[in-house]
Image (cartoon, rainbow, N blue to C red; front, top):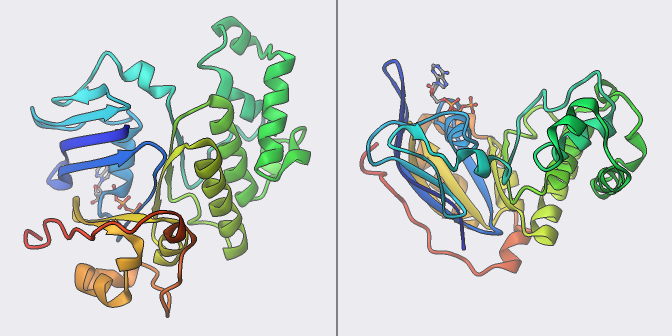
Length: 282
Ligand SMILES: Nc1ncnc2c1ncn2[C@@H]1O[C@H](COP(=O)(O)OP(=O)(O)OP(=O)(O)O)[C@@H](O)[C@H]1O
């Protein structure tokens, strides 16, 4: 089953082409890294998948689990329904800082409980239990009563993942979720993302600068440059030489490790053939 299908998606901001005729398909249950130098279009692509932006061009389409979310530059009637299926985590500011951690996680229920109960914060016992269980699953079960502002950066990201679980979203889009974290916190967040992908079959797309994490955690990587997809294939193909060729001087912006790391995901899924796309065009 296809979770995310994008075809001929373009987006211009003034004279900047942020997305240029992007097409891609991500299967249900895949965990995919999205890499690229600053300004290559990663956030813009994620914002379109999340229904926060509309693209351009009569042929442009975004489908989520087969439902048209946007087409020909307009939100489709199915966009609202699709939103419940998609959860987005940003680099920062994912939580309402003055609310408790538990309430932030319970916000994930808002799409499926009556609006009046949500407005009054009248969450029922099973909903609270589900939120507590989600916090425990991401390793911060003891923090529910704390104000969200008291959590560390990595704990905040994990609370946002707990909210995704409570939302029962089938797709998790994470835009640079580890960019502001120290390596140990970043690994914990990545471990949690992998776990929810493996256990719940949630389709996960994560944008990153750090190639090391793409290699370690993801079977498949999509690489962008100047608003185009320039590589879509197995993360094992992302050798430093290959990336230097792909990005030229911009490869300095990608955080390249000294040596390729064997990655766990590769042991679970058969390797896909690398596809260098549109390299000639850039
Ligand atoms: N709202 C906007 N208004 C004007 N230009 C924008 C807007 N959003 C993005 N852009 C431009 O579109 C291009 C792609 O930006 P985008 O944020 O998608 O890149 P990115 O790969 O996510 O970069 P980073 O890794 O730095 O977050 C950039 O040139 C950016 O300046």
